[in-house]
Length: 366
Image (cartoon, rainbow, N blue to C red):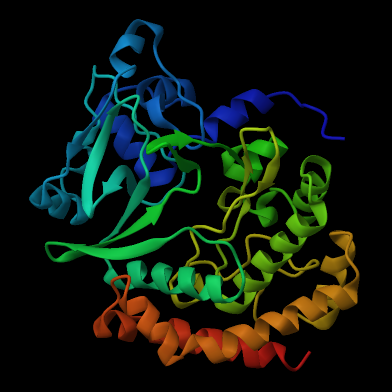
């Protein structure tokens, strides 16, 4: 059903790497060629999922596990965009490989203290930086709103380092076993379907939701539930303004028994209030614009995904009923305050809250 094609293996490994500006900064810092396997050799010691890419000549240095406390002043410099790539030392067994374009580092979070893992140690959280506090609070708000909408999402909280803010996100590809952090295998949809990282958007030749649904039916033990979760993720993206929900922002997890399931939703940001492209990462039917979807687009999406149109419309209405009252609720604000969003942060997401309500009211008219 999913026959291998030329370059699939290269694409799979290349999808483990940072993208765009983060990649270029790493190449410059390490002084190596800008090619996929040179980068993997340099920074593949702790990839997403369970995979580790280790130079056999340096393997001994990566057997023992350790952790080094993160100095608050150092964290503040990183959060302000200073010295962060000092983590990557030329000639040393650097071990931090994180895919995507967003700026982030892996850490261990224990008892409120942040540590940098070393050797074979696995990280437990990702620290995501932004020079704009509004972006940190945007993602934190979306994370909690998605949970209200019934999506599985990783725990997250906001922190401040000096004058800058960051978001700490629990890694869904890690689990604690006997007080040890164990790696869990994952593949994003570009990896699982054999696409190169540059084709993560459907509009640019990347996977479709229909292809993702087909994969879930082929490999998971509860396909109906997994496809429904995929559908609800797309509905949330439309209603909450996340136009960056592309094929690298949705993944599969494989447990110790080899069973596959859809990973929790991650990298949820309301991009519609930011200067980004408004077009969706995945089309609804054949329509990529989240503010111009018609009933026929949702019905077309249903047919593409092998679902009944009334079922898809019912799922849409159910999420409308959850999101609209929650978007501006005192209950949501109170919950966000417990994970680091103060009054200033709540004010910074007012445009996100307004957009969600407007979208919900727009689609009640279908």
